[in-house]
Length: 124
Image 1 (cartoon, rainbow, N blue to C red):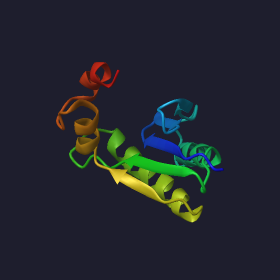
Image 2 (cartoon, helix red, strand yellow; image 1 turned 30 degrees about the horizontal axis):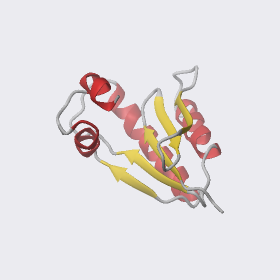
Image 3 (cartoon, rainbow, N blue to C red; image 1 turned 90 degrees about the vertical axis):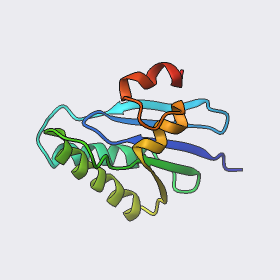
Image 4 (cartoon, rainbow, N blue to C red; image 1 turned 120 degrees about the vertical axis):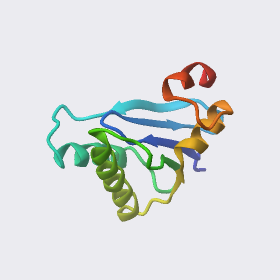
């Protein structure tokens, strides 16, 4: 019997990564990052780490979609990382669901425009 696992990926320089079971029990939870800021090595390391922890037969994967209104230096990195992760998922036979940032916020808090910092307490 295969046990379905639920995976959440929040691509960033410290990529949030979660694997849980159907009852919400945490199987694995961590921020994935690399000690260098040299790209594409950092992006490849993060994507490879994610792929190494997944199971194509049991995992239901959700990845946070791109934030099209974001500004700043990190936007290009997040876009590059997001594409490298998605490319690795597809290449390795994984299917995934894209979750927009506003849909994720609305699901977690009831408010699709809530700031990330304000999401901590409602999620608990």
